[in-house]
Image (cartoon, rainbow, N blue to C red; front, top):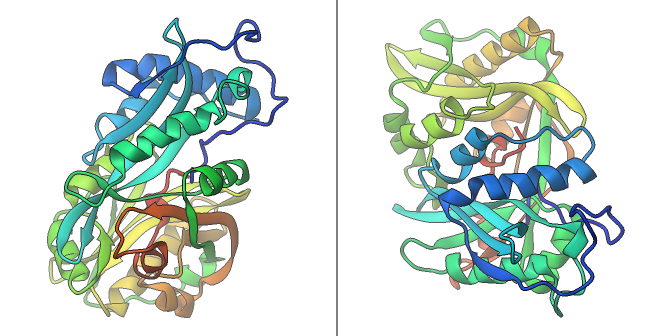
Length: 357
C-alpha cells in the first residue's frame, strides 16, 4: 500500500551495510521522532540509490516538510539495530478528511523500506512486517485522532505483503486522463470569467471548499492550511496555480506541475476545484491549462484520478480521454461501518493526494 518511494527489495539485492549480517541482530521497534530525520534519510537515500535507477537523494528539508510540517502529522514505525541504524521503516502522511461533516484523519502510506541485507531470517515475519504491524496498531482505529483509513499506491511486492500480512484490500484502479494541449488551448471561456496564473494559494479557497464540499460523504480537505503546505511550502516542488474569478469571487482553482509520470511527459493537473455544476469555471481553467502547457513546449495535459472523481464525466466531455495507469488505489479501513468498497465509491483521489509529483 505504498507509493513511488516504497521498497520491498528482491532477495538477491546487493547488501547495503558494510558487511552482510551473519547473526540475528538485536532489533528495536519504536515510533519515529523528529530527531530521527538524519538517520532515516541516511538509510532511505542509501537503499534507494542501490535499487532505483536515476534515484535523486532526498534532502532533510524535504523530509521535514513531509513528516514534521504536515498539518495532519507524519507517522513512522522504525526498526533499528544496536548501533541505532535504521533497518526498516513503515511510514505515512496524515490527511485531513471531511467525513459526513466531521473532520477526521486518514493517512497515505509512503516511504516504507527494508534494508536488503536484513530482509530475511530475522523472524518468522520479515522486518518490513514487523515494522508495519505496530504502525497499524498504533495509528489505525475508528476514534478521534486516529486514522480511519490507510491508503497508498502499492508496488507489486508491497501489495503482496500488505494483502497477506496487513489486511489490505484493493479499492479501485487509478486512471490516467490525458488530452492534447492544443485542444484545450482553443476552448473559449465565458466573458464574465477572469483567469490568472500565480505561484501561491489564491484568496477565497476556504469559502470555495465549504461550498463545493456540501452534501458529499467524504472529501479530502483542501483548505488554505492544506494547500499552502502541499504546494507552496514544498522545498522540492514546482507548481503553478491557476485561479478563475467571476465578479471578483473565486469560483475555481487548479494546480499544475510539469513532469514525467509512468514515462509520460506532460503538464499534470495535480488538483482542482470548482463550484458544483460550474461548467464555465472548469472550461476556463482547462483553457488556461492548455495555454500553460503549450507555453512550456508540452503537447499533453494529463492527470491521474479514481473514477469517483466528481468531475469525471465533465473532464471527458471537455476532451480528456481515459486510459489505464499502472497504479492502483489500495487500503485498509478501520471503520466497521465503512468497508473498503464504501471508500472506493465515495472517496475521490487526485494526483495531488499522492506523492508522485
